[in-house]
Length: 436
Image (cartoon, rainbow, N blue to C red; front, side):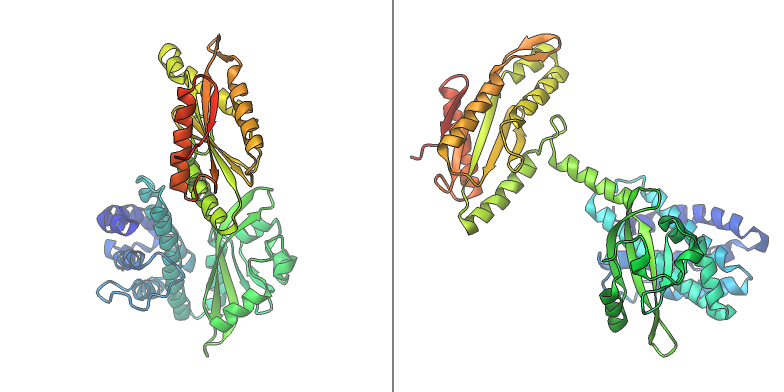
């Protein structure tokens, strides 16, 4: 389910939880249910529609569906009416922060591990920031104390926020920014970006000039070593601040900590591309690397060799001693075979009892034959499994690029055929592919 569909389907649940939190925050104002929920449903529906419109938060939504509520419009009305009700600006910020947390926490109960869900969450966070900005803008205009009020709201945010001059000097930083850098707010203000413990390529002088000239926000993902020594990933957005004449007078920045999301993406990729027993690349990743290397060699003519290794005896161990013993044996086999290849080569588990080598930049049949012999020799020695000494054997099939084929499909077929010939030849045999 897309995040937009989730928002629409669970709207009442979201509003009920959010209303409870907002009522506590605004308790002294004694607001009615209608005043509490003021335009929030239309704001969420507008955000949901924008999530459906496109995945790239950098894309301007010039052709937005006019039938959907305008989240920016209702956010502005919300901010205006909150001011008229006597609500403080930090309470408006707290409402939107609670709204963000309510949606994300409910959404987390669903499967959000695929790339589409991550994209929806990025989009949602971006749109929440936009409606928060619009609401605060209207609130500040109504109260006519924009500068002081923006400092109040930014200081209360958990995300690092700052404002820079066109020369790149910090004019303002909130507490979260100060904590990230291990400095006080006063120590940050007046410093240039280059003097800060931050990645210099995040917002250098050229990037500043691009923001000023294009009058468009810029988005980055950066890794920052925090003052605590921990490396964290951030998604940063830099936005030009325009004066009444439409000229850029400053640049504002906000950084969302996406470390958990990045870790989840890495873990999901690892699970999809690595064998859980041996931690080696699995068949999917091996096929991808083979396709890439074949394409490279087709352009450059660089040779390489493909070796398929079939292990006999794994099935019997599984049946006699159990799968955990079989997995222990597989890990031991992987450790021994890893000694046979260079770090630059690819070593993968491509089947229940099958492994593969991709030896790069070599056409030396003697050297490749020696590697096959070393592989079989590593397999000959006894393995300790469940307090027993067990023995297994192997068969190695070898094919070469470009001698035996120039496509990944042909090479896979030829390596498998050579491996079958080696099995038929007896225990611990290796065979080069022999063309017809």
